Image: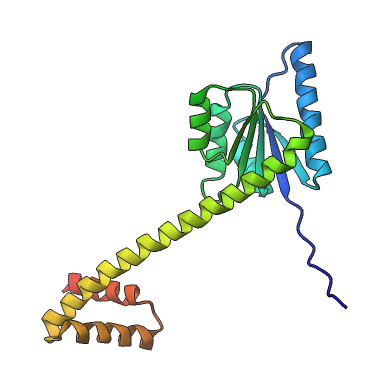
Amino acid sequence: MKSPSPVQRTLRIVVVNTASCAGEQAAAAQARRNTALRIGLLESGYDIVASLPADIFLPERIAQIQPDMIIIDSESDARDVLEHIVIATRDEPRPIVLFTDDQDPSSMDAALGAGVSAYIVAGLQAERVKPVLDVAMARFKRERRLLDELSDTRRQLADRKLVDRAKGVLMARSGLTEEQAYQKLRSMAMNKNMKLGEVAQRILDVEDLL
């Protein structure tokens, strides 16, 4: 008998509405956009945890709700709201999808530069919502993985420089060869249950004090 598959947690989504509803036609168009988006999200099994206005309180509200994804519904230029969202996601990045009618290349560049995972022009139809969100989530995860790998590489290079400097200190003070100095660093790291770079930094700190 097969064990039951684990239940996948529903994606929690915040929708940010930036469109103006001045006039009956604009209000009707906005209502159609809202309906299409809501239908697409609900039919795909997503959880709409909040629908927020694009105001100065947006970063605080997003921080309180902690959604898995942010969707921006904007008829035109959304640069102002993007500034708020950049602040809200600076410490805890999450995928951002922008549905808009703005085809200006500069607006697209600004949005992608701000961290938008998917910039969708004139594509707010219910049946398109799920595939767009799937692609946005996949792209976001890939970018985060690449950034983590880059961060690890930079940290390794920094640690290597510290170790080289610490070896030089040990060689000068104790008359050790390079290999002996390295083995001494390794032994100290193992004995203190510390990383090699941390031990090297401590040695350099002591050398600076002396």
